[in-house]
Image 1 (cartoon, rainbow, N blue to C red):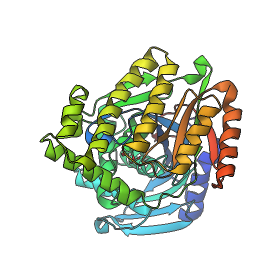
Image 2: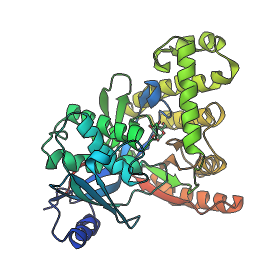
Image 3: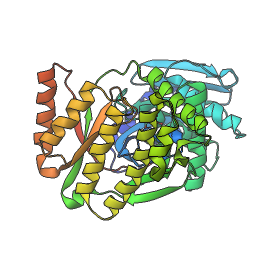
Image 4: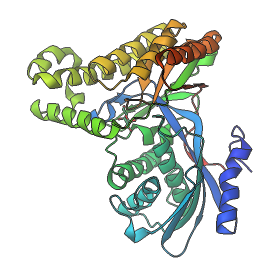
Length: 395
Ligand code: GLA
């Protein structure tokens, strides 16, 4: 019996059907985890700052059974590839590519002292790949949820346990897959609640659930996947992170979270010129997250929209992680009546979000498409989203 009647049953069973075909018997269970969009608080997670993601309705599904021979055998329906590796052979860069995110979770749980054995895994996903919507975190967290249940680790029980599983998924991504990301995505996939945005304090690890139901006030959140390949993202992301660490070291603070917004001007004056706009973005963005949470709680969506706009400007001009497609998508959304719009995720491509009156969703989609055509950009994909639920067992 599906615990998630909201989910398309054909989609749930696709991973399970493929599992039975490939393994020769049905999977013990099916688990899934969502992609995410971040409402505001970009490039703040690795600075100990605040972020405010929602879980997407889009999910990665994993049909899984235990194996007794210490092997991981994982098949991806999207990639059409099966990878087999002994748990003892998993390490930095091994296995390479997409399966490293799966293997990395088992490695990290074992490194954390959990008694985890081999698995047969078939994964399927409707989280758009390479769209900046955290398909990799969804993959890690779906497999982490399965491992937790199948090896009785108890890591899905409460938020504290889920935070521990999220930390293992972050280690998988940082140490095995080799992507130095900051942890927001895994927290979103494991700790979000349906109908809520997750206010995560990346310094303390504490979370607050902030009610997020735009439809109640006749609004919608429109995601635009610009379908722009972000080839430079890895190097640029690491460079931004390194710049923040350099600035924190120069200021003799543990992270840029320690810089009070009220002392921004005098703090910037102490830094070499190149680092100033980066630090200005981080410090002002953390302030904008707090302001956005207050505005959401007060039902002031006009104020939320202004903060989204300010976040985009800061990411474009100070942090320099936007790109023409992202800029055009937010400008077109605003021209169609959005209260505010911004790039979401790491940047250099990927997706943007727009807060819009529900009545102009179609007009905004049309406007964004037309603007992309005028600029000769690849056709974007637009879809409205609501705040979905965290990783868990489906069947
Ligand atoms: C990527 C990373 C996150 C976060 C964002 C920027 O999505 O995976 O950890 O740093 O970029 O906010």
